Length: 560
Image (cartoon, rainbow, N blue to C red; front, side):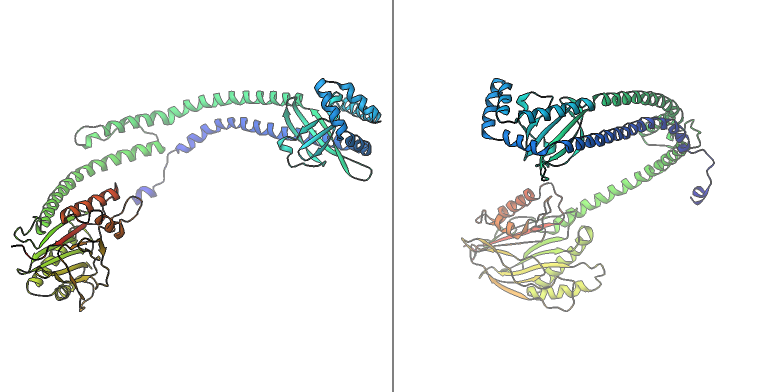
């Protein structure tokens, strides 16, 4: 490998070949440069027109008599004028406006302003020059030589782009398209003799000819850019086909043929093509050949691994069956005993699990109940489970109390526990004659009990540490009493910790709620309904832990 990476490559890189083609394609950038030139030129032309228009508007506004404009504005804002103007607009009567101005002694002033603005408009070759007073979002039209007499006193609502301008103030020149085409517009305030801005002098310069010339320039440049692009693309296609496309197509077909080969792959299936280019494609061809060789070797090894996996799977199936047979599976387990009804189930997360349950008669009158959870999963946990189950049963049959049995098992499990496995256990002995019971809890889940005609409730108390964690500890015992009709439910953490696809836990509250949906149901039905509720809650989410449950209903003294 070191020899390969350290060897100096003496071929011409594919990137060099492609860069030669890209040099031709650089001509396409001419279109981009043309667009930039168009934009820059347009900005300069617009700026030139804006500056000139603004200067013209400022100069004309300077020579306007603001006091006369203010008198005219005051007159047209009066109720008398507005009433007359409204009727004149309805009848298209310009003479009424003229007569009103004459009567008010303002016609000569208006005529002088109108003539002056008309003279400026013609000399500057402007589209229009006008005087307007801005108040809020309204503009009151005063003088425009391009309009008739009805223009005086008419109201215009300001365009959206002028919302920021609510008074007569300087407005930056703009270039925009309107119903009259492209216009460059500028606005400067007209001041009275005491320095108040009473109106705006507006000027619109026609830019349609300028825009037509600019668009024609753009069309020509885009045409030449398109021609260059076509030539460059054709040339690129020809060169790329020869240098890259054809070899890659050959390589692709050969790889597909290798992938579609039927039966087992052999060394004869490895591709062989006339590709001799000293570039990246040549290297790719060599790497694919090498990969195919490794694939043939891998498939040979895979055959062996698959056979081994099938063997292990078969052994695991046997282990699953053996583990299931180690737990009580026949129900009812004691057909001739009527003091209690009992049912239990265990659903491992893997082929074999670490949870287990057990129940057996220590003597004629005492029933042992065990439910436990070994840390971890799979075969290691199952082995610990077998040992723990056997040790507990052995101690109880020897006469130990639950606490004594757990203490003895703990000492034995702590010896040589290099794997660090521990076991949580709930263990109880129930006197079938009296209903008196003794339980010990080694780090296990809290039991749930239901009194006759009542509701299931979680019995919470402080428990001891798990088995195989600390040597030399004593396990605390708890006494309890069951009356005829009472039901006991114990479980492993796989029940409350069942998780759905939203990472929400099933929880003990939901568990107790499911038990109380049908509290009078027997043990087997209760466990079936609980498993159904868990499956519906979890949905498509995978099962991460073993789910083990045991339910006992105490009936009292044996019936005659």
